[in-house]
Amino acid sequence: MIPAIVARNVRKSFGQVEVLRGITLEVRFGEVFGMIGPSGSGKSTFLRCLNSLETVDDGDVYVNGEFVGYRFQDGVLRQLDDRELSAQRMRTGMVFQRFNLFAHMTALENVCCGPMVVQGVAREEAHKTGRALLDQVGLKGYYDRYPVQLSGGQQQRVAIARAMAMKPEILLFDEPTSALDPELVDEVLETIKALAKEGRTMVVVTHELAFARDVCDRVAFMDEGQLVECATSAELFGAPKMPRTRDFLQRLNAQAAA
Image 1 (tube, rainbow, N blue to C red):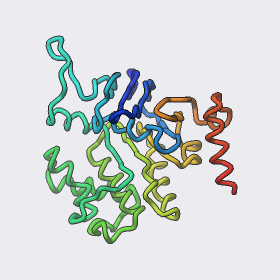
Image 2 (cartoon, one colour; image 1 turned 180 degrees about the vertical axis):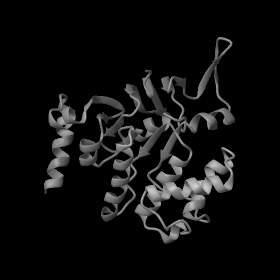
Image 3 (cartoon, rainbow, N blue to C red; image 1 turned 120 degrees about the vertical axis):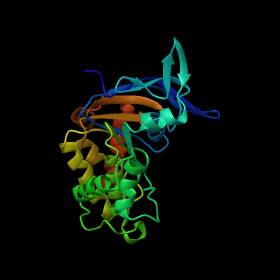
């Protein structure tokens, strides 16, 4: 079976700043793949490259064997147009740091908007699926609440249900708890843990090291735009091989213990 995601020598710059410096990795189907590292290390930029929210300057990205953002046609590599990009992006559901919910829509309407508008799903079917997804993320009975009536954790769970409503093959999480008050973090992490138990393919950029250690199958540590180390969660947190990884984990563990 081909991997769910293949990245080969991915590079990305913003102006003179090289944010990604040759990232090469693979994610298997059914795997929960974590990405950790200091702020500014390129984790979120790499995640956005997986569904063409950012275009790479060099290197290749494949999702389920399909070249992301491009297609060979008559022996020539051409960039996908907006319609083709939208169709390709539906294969990866993105959950952002900020919830990005439509303020004028209820929780149910936020979840159902994509399937109805983009995929042409009938309203009754979309609402039935949307209610089931909100139930799944612990928001039964919150269907008619507007974002302003929800806590940050509840809004993020609506955002997770919204991503799932498009029936993506892969879920991408970009620091899904970073915008939350500390007491609301656990409810979102528990939702992601439940999805992991279903065998979903997920890539999770996170600062929650305990979550990465306990839930992720493998974890990549990034620093200064480079992939420093990638290993099983047990190996990376229990016996990291690279000095930079050890220093990062020791510093964060010391801060947590203080």
